Length: 257
Image 1 (spheres, rainbow, N blue to C red):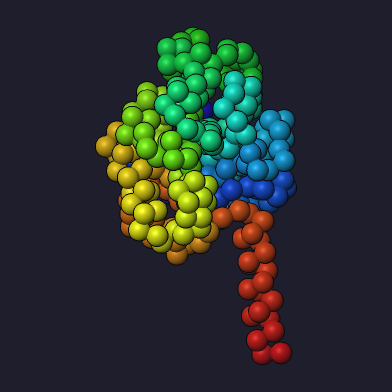
Image 2 (image 1 turned 180 degrees about the vertical axis):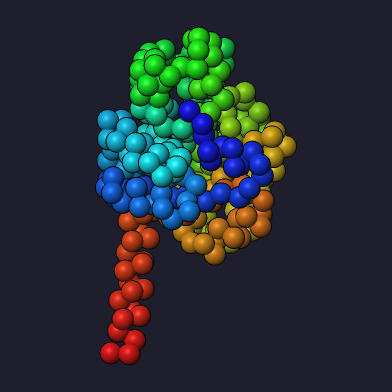
């Protein structure tokens, strides 16, 4: 169960993904033809359950697009089911403390790192592709599935140096809208206090040998975040990029009309 996105990040390459909200497996397959490295199936703000997420995982993998998911809460069922259907990584929102992060690892990693439930599921081809023994499967799954807490609260920001050092998490995902709102400066992404805060997250991640990822609305903003040493940018939502693309087509078509 190779995680191609993880391999690319470990080589030090910048990566790009996008959120998936449309619910169309055809659209998701087409996203895999664009050069994107990964897609985030959104079960927090999106309407999808684990069963539908499993269908999206299959669609993404047809074109080597790494399937991630954002869970809707820090709970055993929310984390376990999305890993069992084959998601290669989870973004976990509403992290307030190091105790929350330890719970994520407990639910999302197998022994000896955590207490993830053991079963035959799509992720291991229903036990037909476990790499050998049960211990082999635990090792492979723990290495290849990424747990990524989302830094979007003041509590997480204030304790970021300790949070990123929890064994079992791969890095942090900065949620700029919620984080700026929690800081009392909603949407002020160029505010010096906000820029200082996200730089603090990047520096803490790299000091701990972890990845740092963020959401942004445009390619231009992604380049700004890459200049701040972010490892990856998750750009927009599939539905918004579709609207923007068609608007551009309409504008261009009518320029000389």
